[in-house]
Image (cartoon, rainbow, N blue to C red; front, side, top):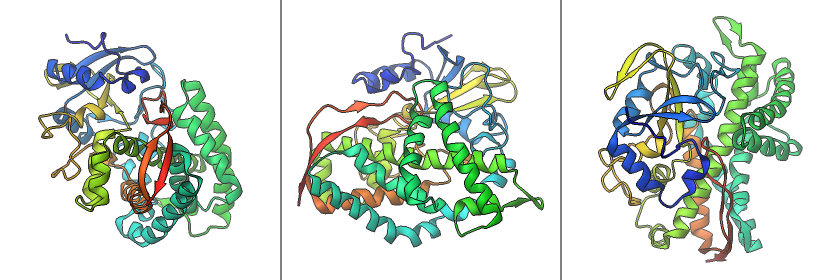
Length: 394
């Protein structure tokens, strides 16, 4: 039975290595599905091909999210939000929990907010250009944080705290550190939910706090857990996709010039950068019954990790996958998920990324790296902790 003992996919340092694409490609050629003996999570089935990844993500009846959607919780541990959070439920419960959030992230709502997002992105870039030399990770973080806090109507004085605890919750090196981050954010969200259940406003917290399923309000604990998931995901995913996308463009300046000349549309460019960076490296599922995947017998209770990064570079699904083709079409990448768990915030994330990249292209002639980048140590949202640059204005 093929294993990945020679290449530990759960090692965060692996994903910053220059030889990783070749290593993962070789594993994928050997087999679409491997058995990985992980240090923290025990045995896990690793899915590397696009076709089998899509099969797992589409089939919630066989591959459940309820026992956890991400590696790192530890072997045998079930997340506290199991069966209570969007990320940790299967249909039809998943649809019920997703319903109150949908209007805030719908394409129509995002189109209505696009001008404000573009204006905010422009002001953030203007400040960065004025400084000249900045850490681009910090600079781009301001946009998703502001947009998410606007949706939640978080007071200005609380926003720095929200960003700080989101970092720990998503990027902590150990399960204990990540839990500590959530445990700092949750009391704050609980306080806000209590306030807005009694005095609702026109914001996402109020909508979740007052939403009824079957005539009953969602339990306050469930509201808080879902908001915690939305906040952390909304801030971190855009932050790291933006930073990694810009790092890619800095390393390939001809792509930056093509975008500046208008030779490639922003929508297709964003999809290709989402595919290429695949900052959400993996998604976890648990088999709810015995099944078979690529000839492997998957037993009930077995955990199955879809390695999105690998699936998005599968040559059976993408022509020239190791090249960055900003006008790639079609581009059915899995960076934002597939099936019932397709990212609820996908339209908003793309609007934020588009606003940020457009503002930079309009205002910056050259982004020059001035020091070494520092990759984070996360297999949940793989990105950069530090990206020092000099911005030359147009």
